Length: 147
Image (tube, rainbow, N blue to C red; front, side, top):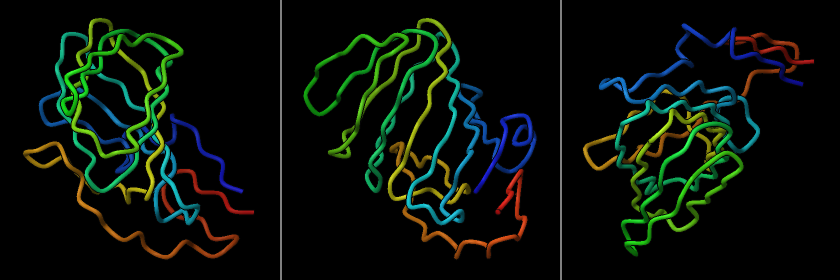
């Protein structure tokens, strides 16, 4: 069992901010946890326009707070986003998230990210192999409690 809180993650290497200050990603579950996916809470600043392309990952996003739009740059279709919206990037779509009201999202990546990834010039995360998970009972990183 792994139990973590966002308070434990804040200020650690799992609390990753965009260099431009447009978003913050709290990486709650990472590849090294050995569960086959990663899970993040991402907050995106109001007024920002963010271009992403997860060429190496499938991403599912559930919008908890805020509003804006999602542009599928592959098709040109724009979707409204608000609390309760979900989008799944199952075709590695290039996409743009435009934020009207600050967004808080819960995101799942497969394969999992390891936590050190940063977006390249095209908005892509590199594919990095996850380290082997810690042994049961070993405490590693922010709030890792294995039972």
